[in-house]
Structure formats: C-alpha cells, structure tokens
Length: 600
Ligand code: ADP
Image 1: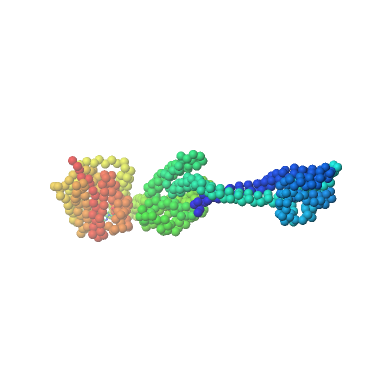
Image 2 (image 1 turned 90 degrees about the horizontal axis):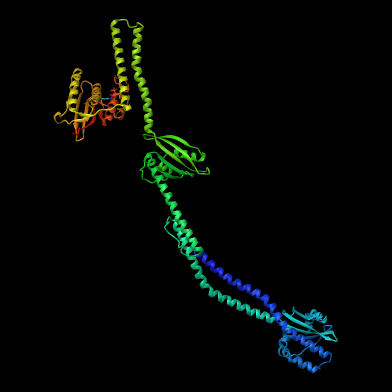
C-alpha cells in the first residue's frame, strides 16, 4: 500500500478533480441557468402580457366588445402562466380564461393556492404596475414554497392605469430542469470517471516506473552497488532527473573508491607499524586496532576482538582513554606487562569545530630502550666502581707508606707488591675499556684472510698446556688436524678471543677440572670451542654473560673486569660470527664460536 502511495494519490487527485469540476459546474450552472431561464420566460411572457393589457384597454375604452375580447384572449397562448386582473386597489377583477389556463386549471389550482394568497404575494408588484411600471420579477411564496415569475403590465383607461394584468408562472419547472441537469451531470461525471480511471492509472504507472527505478538505484547505492544506472534516454524532467542521478552515482562511486583507497593505505600503514594503535570514538567504543597492539597484549594478530577488556585487560588504560576524551587532554603512562615495558600516549581527537570525536592511543614497547638506558646507568656505575676499587687500594697503601706507618722493609716490599698488582689491574681495566669502546665505535677494520684455524688452536693450546701444567690443571686439544678446513677470518682477532676464553676457563676451574680446546665443522662453518669442568654458570646469568661488566660472581672480588666476554662477542660480531655458551653449575661450561670456512 505504502509502496504505491504516489500512484494512489495521483488517481485520487484525478477523481477529486473530476468530482470538483462536476460540483462547480452544477453550482455555477444552477446560478446562471436560473437567471437565464427566468429572463427567457419573462421575455416570452412580457409581449403576451402587453397584448392582454392592450386588449383590456381597448375593451375598457369600449373599442372592442366583451365577446371579441374573450375570443382574442382565448386564442392567445400564455405559455402555462396564470393570468390575473387586478383593479387599482388591488382587488381581483377576475381571472382571464385562456385555453392554456383551462387546460392547466387543475394543476394551477392545486399549485397556486387561493386568490387571497395571490393578492398578498403580488401586492408589491400590483402597486408598481398601478403606478404605470412594467414589472418583471421573481417572487417567493411561503405558502407553496415555490418561486414565481411575475410579469405585470398596466391597463390604461383615458391614459390612466386603472388595472393590472399579471402573469405568474412557477419557476418550479426551472428547478425540475435543474434537477434533471444535475442528475445528468453526476451521471456524466461518473461515466467520465470510469473512462478516465484506466488511462490515468496507466499514465500514472508509466510515470512511476522511472521514479521506482530511481528509488531502486538509490537503495542499491546505499547497499554499496554504484554500477547501477537510471534510464536517462527519456525526455523531459524525468530524463534530466535520471541523468542527474547517474552523475551523482558516478561521482559517489569515484569519491567512495578514492576514500576506500585512502582508508586502505592508512590501514596498511597502521597495520605495518611496530607501535600498537587503538582508536576509540567519543563514547570510548573501539573503532580501530592494529596487529601490533594485539601482539603486545598476547593475542593472535589476526583475531577479531572489539571488547575493550578483551583486548587490553587493564582497566587503568581504559580509564586514561575516558579521561582524555572527557578532559580533552593527552594522557601518558607506562605499563609493565610480563617482561615488557609499554609506554602509552593517548591523544584526544577533535573535529574541525573542536568537538571531541574520540581518542587514539599509541603503545610503544620501550623494553629495549629501557634496558639500554639501564645498561648505560649500570655501565657508568660499574666503570666508577671498577676504577674506584684499585684507586682506593693504591691510595690506602701509598698513604700508609707515606705516613711511615709501614716500618719494616719486608712490609714495605709487600705493600709495593700490592700497589703494583692494583695498578696492573687498573691498567688492564683501562685497556679493556678502551678496546671495547674502540670495537663498539665501529672504526676498526678487520682484515680477513685464509687462516689455518687448527694450526692456530694447536699452537695456542700447546702454550696453554705448559701454563696449566704449572697450576696442576688438565688440558687437552681435541682436533682432527689432518682434515681440518681453513677459515676466512683474522688470526689475531681469533687468537684474542681464544685467549679471553682460555683465561676464563683457567680462572673458573679448580685443580680437579679439565680444560679442552678444539674445533668441529660442517660444510659452511668451523665451530671452535673451549670447554672446562669448572664452577659453571647459573641459568639466570647465562643471558647476560656477554654484557659489559657482567659478573656471575656478584661479589666482584675476582680479578676479572667483566669486560672479557663483551670484547670477545664484539670482535666476533665484527667478523660476522656468533658466540654462545652452554653451562651447568658445578659441572662446567663450553663456549663455542663460529668461523666461516674458506672457499677456494
Ligand atoms: P671477567 O674478567 O670477570 O672474567 P668476563 O667478561 O670474561 O669477565 O666474564 C664475565 C663473567 O662470566 C665472569 O665474571 C664469570 O662470572 C663468568 N664466566 C666467564 N667465563 C666463565 C667460565 N669459563 N666458567 C664460569 N664462569 C665464567
């Protein structure tokens, strides 16, 4: 029903228009026809009344006899009117008998009422006629309820109006003819309505078709289909509307595809970020998340989550979002999650009019930068500490010697020995620090060439065997020298690394332990290892072992600087190699590093 509202309305309008025109025609016609009919009738009656009056005048002046008068009157048609004769006082002189009157006498009597009534009815007309005026007017009778047409003509005797001939004719016939006319009009209206109904229905439907089509197109466009087009071949306004519609569809499709491209580009950019992004609308409902945020909070990057606490199960973060929106201010906070430190910056989003439309949160994983910062702080503290220890020792010893507190030559020699040892430690520390910073500055070029790694290991091993024999440690070299491949490396740097590892192995292995140096290989690499059966390293220490100043012996009392392994790793990484350690407390450690095989 609603679908065809327009059609129904058009048909209703047509029906109303036809009915209205019929009603207006009836009313206008009723008004006009009444007058026209009255005028026509009175125009017909007036000459007859004049003729009657003339005959009467002639009779009164005795120019004609009563018989002749009677004959002449009888021969004259009065067109269904009733003819009355009144004297100057309005007294009825008689009714003139005519053929018409006789033939309609029955009707006339029943319709017109008594003579007295006529006198009352025609009183004013008679007075006017007696004054010598000819009267043509319509009069309403309350008794019969009809309108009458009255034509009055004076009768003169000796040039003086002595009587009045009055023709009265009820206008009822006019009303009857009006009724007939109205009935005809209504019938013709109904008929024309019936005739018009089908063509107007078809015409309206034809008109509706392109409009309906345009409605369907608008709906299709609302659903995202911009390929639909209206029929713009039509002429006139509908054709113009259709082509405007098609132009709208084209522009809309262009704009939307442009917006889509832009949105995809933005989405790809956001999705590619390492930083987590969460955008919310003004009500705090999530509108966008990127894979990084999902990963940060332990979800699969492809999961679809839209509940706030499902994504970030930390109420305080969402409180910050709400506050940023409510107070129009940026919020910052750091959150510790598992082993991660996240820095969160939430910024409210405003539209062109400055209204808050949402907020966007940027989540940065600052674990690494925090760690580096901490390392830097630790480095400064460690360097100060490592420097202070020998300096304080030397100072104390020197002060004691200077103040003469140490008296005996033997004690003095012992003190000098301490000072020398501390000074050596200090200079070793400074050398190590300088070496490390040189390596880390990246200014040192490492010259790589063909190196007989097994010869190098053998030579170094032999040297260390003598040293370990002296301190009672077992030492062995594990090598298949004959099949040993050459490596592409720098022999000095490799030796430097091996010395660090062998020194440590000796340092952290007691007399019962054994130290082994050797190498294995595959098609690409040679794996050089230094194995000991010393104190071993706890699992907690292993990840940090190659950091600067890291000592698993927390008391820092040993002679080491905590820089040896850092230097070793730095040297190897400069050559593109890696180093790792496997260790178990009280069982020993194995340090292994790679060297690329030489390809001839
Ligand atoms: P240091 O000069 O203190 O030896 P390193 O950087 O060479 O400094 O070593 C760092 C720390 O690693 C040492 O303090 C020690 O605790 C541990 N370490 C190194 N090598 C060994 C090993 N072979 N056995 C046990 N612990 C070791």
